[in-house]
Amino acid sequence: MPRYHFDIHENSRVIPDEEGQDLAGESDAHKEAVMTGASIARDAFVSGSAQRVVVDVSEDGAPVLKVSITLEVEKA
Amino acid sequence: MPSDAIRAALLKRLRISSGISEDDVKEIEALPIVVRQFPAETPVVRDGERATDCCLIAEGFCVRSKTIASGKRQILSIHIPGEIPDLMSLFLHVMDHELSTLTPSTLGFISHETLQKLHRRSPGIAEMFWRDTLIDAAMFREWIVNVGQRPAPARLAHVMVELRERLKLIGRAEGNSFEMPLTQEQIGEALGITAVHANRIIKQLRQEGIVELQRGRVTVLDERKLLELADFDDRYLHQSPTL
View 1 (cartoon, one colour):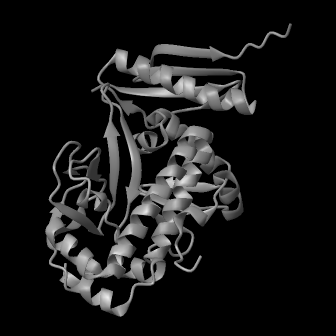
View 2 (cartoon, chains in turn blue, brown; view 1 turned 90 degrees about the vertical axis):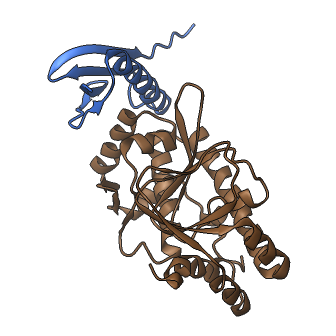
View 3 (cartoon, chains in turn brown, green; view 1 turned 45 degrees about the vertical axis):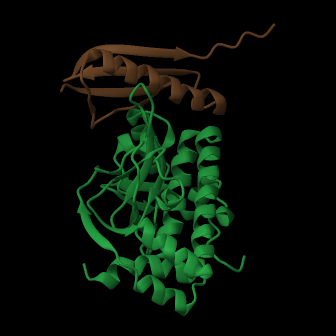
């Protein structure tokens, strides 16, 4: 099973993933990234600690995909 | 494991949390218990299975969990030595969730028939088991509040503090450190988040100088910050029979 690393960016703060996760393939890595981004964004947006969350997925140092979630509030 | 060691954690817990009488201690000491060893991460009773015994944890950690159609698992509770996590199977015969080990465990099986006779013979024990089951339900209420309402770092802090308070009762949380043998994936399953998110909050709590979780062991770095983050009120554990 390939080992994927999920680095997390909250605004400009980066939390690197040194350990990584063994997953069956890219489609599982995609799912994991979307779910992780969504649940981190939920906490960060509600507490106001960040307005943008990015999950940067790589395998063996090579980029695989990136999930970006941004909070946009438009006041009338 | 000698047969009194099988019951040691259970009796220790019942003495403190239920004020068990010496006659009832003798009843429990005389209970026929079949001891079996289980490897880590192994089902003990599966969802849908018909249980014929209740299982006393003598050594090791177990979890109760439920798996949904997509294959995702929710961990419902963590269990430690001295607990009988499937006591409800005495009356609810077909399992509606799974009980499995986290770590290699020594489990003692007590047949339903034996327990039913004991219930009828000793009202004190029946009351104690009823109390245990009610506390179990109180812990599930707290678990729902935790997973449903708190942000992820607070969820983890709460589960940690609860586990520590329960380990204290059986003399297994000395000083500022205690066992919590869950992988990142299992922490994710307990808190309703992904393994990657679990990893992220474990790091956050360490960076903020609150707790360190390493190789299945929690070390508390700042007690005050931990309790504040966990929003922990131990009333729901009902650890003293006089309260």
